[in-house]
Length: 118
Image (cartoon, rainbow, N blue to C red; front, side, top):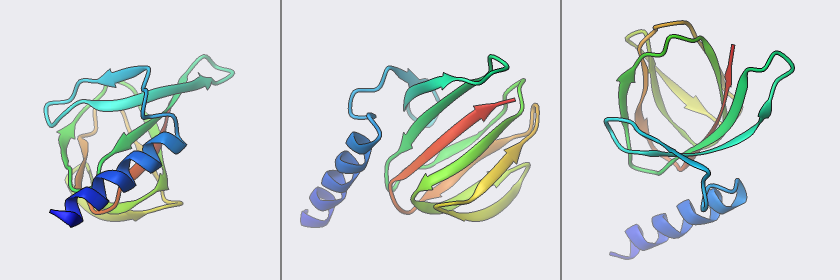
């Protein structure tokens, strides 16, 4: 299918732009592994990384013991935070508290997210 081939090429170009074509880590997730590259450590020693979500995927809600910020660098779709589904697009920022369920309901366009742990 030509459309699927174009989508895959677009994913690869965007992933390459952020170094995710050769990720340093594949985060395990029940909905599929997520390619990740650590960017650096913040002054407080908290991690910051970039992750890539391919167009057409979704990630069921999960929880973490730490709070974090999600910054959408590219893409659009829908995110669920504590049961509330919201649209997202490039430039949006979401705060996720400790043990708050969150996930990507629908990834309409290849999405790049920066996550900063608190």
